[in-house]
Image (cartoon, rainbow, N blue to C red; front, top):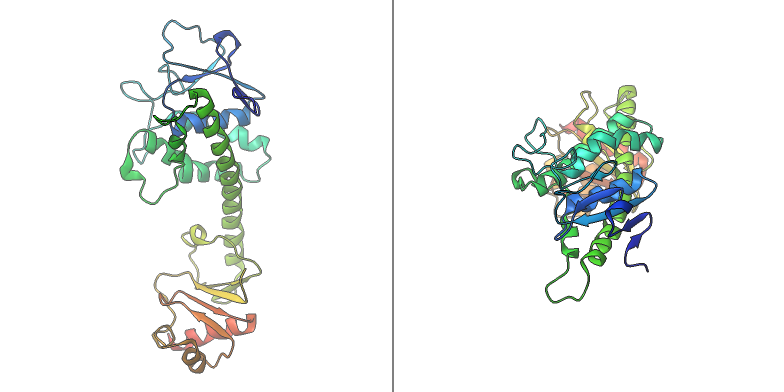
Amino acid sequence: MNPKKYKNIKLVKNLDKANCVTHSGCFHVDDVISTIFLRKILKNVKLIRVPSTENLELKNKIVYDIGLGEFDHHQVNRNGKRKNGIYYSSIGLLWQRFGRNYLADLKIKNIDKTFEYIDNELIQYIDATDNMQFNYLNGKISPDFVKFYNPQWNEKISENEAFLNAIRSADEFWNIYLKHAIAEVEAIDFILSEVQEAKECYLVFEKEIPYRKAVKLINSNVKYFIFKSRREGYDIRIIKDSVRFNNEIVHAKNIAEARKLTKIKDLLYVDFNGKLCCTKTLDSAIMLVKYNEKIL
């Protein structure tokens, strides 16, 4: 394994050979993810990590997280912020500039929605992490684990080797997250399309689909989603905050009592929060919905 190279990223010591410049020393999630993103949009990243850009000739180089330029955020007034108050870091600035072109090159179906999804659900929280705006991070994804790849005080490893180790891990994260984001955006569009055609208070899906973001946009009479479960049978999920499964089955002392009350012999599970039930067959799932509707 080349200690100075990872795929199309090569760490160089000579500025003349570099096409990208960032800071040396302790690395953080924003400069690591920025490097990963640049590797996606450039054929080759020849990166030099420097302590300062003062008196350096930086023409025709992408300079990020250092230098007070277009892709840095350490200026006195930083370098812009979102309407919600989150300042941009290097990855946020790079994403704003190149993100849509990157998605277009991948032939993503809905570029604008996917761009916004990734920005809203990932990029802005990396920005918030690096700008120490921790009040925005409650329960949100920010791959800040990369900081643990910095050399430990008792570890014999070079700074560049540690940086490349972080790059490898962050690259895997980026690839998985991109796949997730594309699937989420397509799921939202698909679910909203199905809801528009719905004639009942429930919809049936033949596979599990991420639905929580889609239901926030639903304004219809649909109350239940029925999914073919990855485990067994079918899951019946209530999607409206104002609706629950009836207390008599939610508080039943065991599943046998719940089966007796509903007259559904293959009822498999009733969640104590009243938002999820499971049955063995689709017919039973629909019967459970109708049972719940009668007693609401």
